[in-house]
Amino acid sequence: MDRQKLSALAHADHPIAAPLADPAVDDLIDRAVRPGAHVLDLGCGEGAWLLRVLNRRPGVTAVGVDLSGEGFDRTRAAAEAAGVADRLELLRQDVTRYEAARPADVVLSIGAAYAFGGLLPALAAARGYLADDGVVLLGDCFWEREPDPDLRAQLEDGPQKYADLPTTVSQVVADGWTPVHGHVSTLAEWDAYEWSWTGSVARWALDHRDDPDVESALRTANAHRDLWLGGYRGVLGFVTLVLRPTVAPR
Image (cartoon, rainbow, N blue to C red):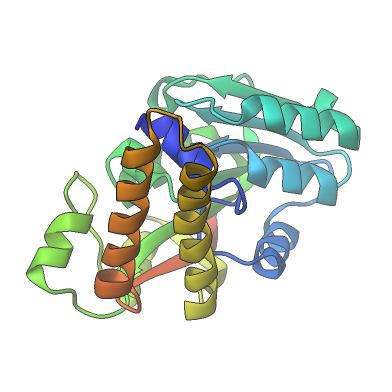
């Protein structure tokens, strides 16, 4: 199955494509985004974070950039219905090639560090777009406990590697950032996210038995569920940090 189609199906019931419950998302937005801010989301997925920001914070303008563009039409329609579409721009392009028209007061990178090759390259990219008094909202995985070698190999099969939480935060601080808040996703948040991910894909397959992607969808849902329940449940964590530059960007 096409990766973009799969992602759209997997997040149909959990548009925030990360293990975060709604109260945590709202709290992070309230801490990071002031009214009237300009917000940039690098690797925005369908734009769910930006839609939440626009509905929660008056006067905000928002730009989302993602290579896929899957779900953009749905998000634009929701923004139109909420009366905030004139303050939202969604761009389908490679985030590493995006050129901003203005500095951002808030830069979001939630579960998208892989697009830049890792956590610190993602922060370097964010810094380049950030206003002098700006804030970065960064979300990424870490190891809750040491994984076995096979699991590590499966989940670190690209350029991005994970560390434990203290090391992850220390790397961010050493890179010139100060955490002013953070949220570590709970096991309940992870479970809700993963059941939604696997269940949405499986339900679609059972409801569309004549689609040529049915078998692929079911195999993917089953494999993902097995890897989660039998592998990284309670091992892989997710932290979302509200960051300010220790030294203002130049």
